Structures are given as structure tokens and as C-alpha cells.
Amino acid sequence: MAQPEQEAQRLAEATDADHLSLAELWLAIGDKAQAIKQALAAYKWAWSDGEPYVQRWELNQAKALFQKLATPEPDLPDYDPTTAERFPWPLYNPLPMLRDGQ
Image (cartoon, rainbow, N blue to C red):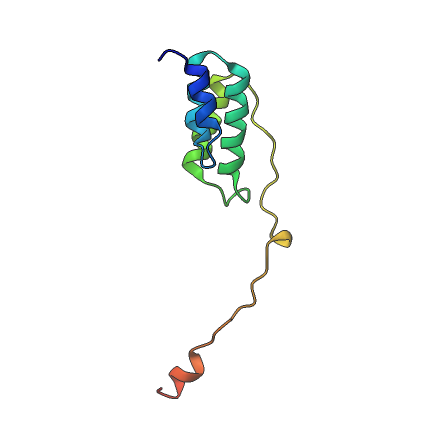
């Protein structure tokens, strides 16, 4: 590849960029700062709502990448049920109809 930095930058600008792969690409190119930036984005995405509600495989991959980069993992908050969006359950209760045989 003639200009890998430009190609990596073009890929990073995509709205659905794969930050984990981009971090690996930047690391292979030799740009540690960009690799850390993408690894952080991958970690935050995988962290999702926080433990235990994480994207486990992706989070483990991001953690391994931080180890490769010799950079500490970010300290993100665990899941807090008091901040979760409440849904008006039940929106529909089929039990009365089922009891009446309908």
C-alpha cells in the first residue's frame, strides 16, 4: 500500500468504522497515538452500559490491544440500574384474553 496513513484516515471517517481493526491498522503503521485513539473508541463501544452488560468478546479484544500498546485501560463506570431507561411495562397484557379463551 503506497500511503497507508491516508487509507487508515479514510476508513476512520466512516460512520460505522470498526475501531478495533483501525487500532490494529494504526499500530501496524506505527502511529501509536492514532492506535490508542481508535482502541479507546473500541473499548467505549464494547463497554456499552457497563459491567455486566458489555460486548464481552470485543471488550476482551480491546483490553488485549491496550496491553499491546502498553497503555492502561480506561476506567469506565459499571452499569447503574438507577439510570436505566424505564419502560412502561406491560404495554400489552394478553393474559385476560387468554383466561377467557379468546
